[in-house]
Image (cartoon, rainbow, N blue to C red):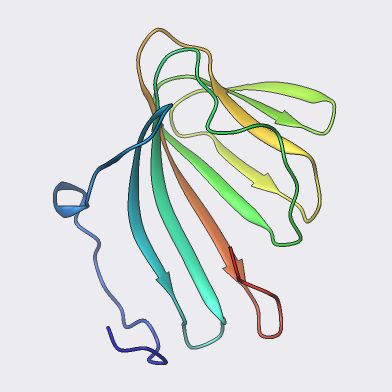
Amino acid sequence: MSEGMNLASVVFDWTKLEVRPTKAGFSRPITKSKTGTLDQLSIHASTLNPGQAAHAPHRHPEEELIILREGKLEALVNETRTPMTPGSVLFLAPNDLHGVTNVGDTPATYFVIKWFPPGMNSAK
């Protein structure tokens, strides 16, 4: 896709996504693109090995969705820890402290979706 063009309607085929090793498992980049209404839509899939967290709890100004595909996660939002089972959806409001940890004995795979409206910094 050319720089500056909006993302067109598309199916991202799971079997064709690039798999990148991380220290906690794997990452599959899906898209980081401008859309018709957003400065950027960022989607990736992460797979965490048992007992692993993707990173330390953090916060950011953009909203975020985490959708669990398989495995078991524990979501931390501010001071609250909540179990997630396959199909669970975690919505994260701006600036909430958050993180996820694989609390199961098998890998946990989830999708991360972030969007940046016009004027919001999408440097990450």
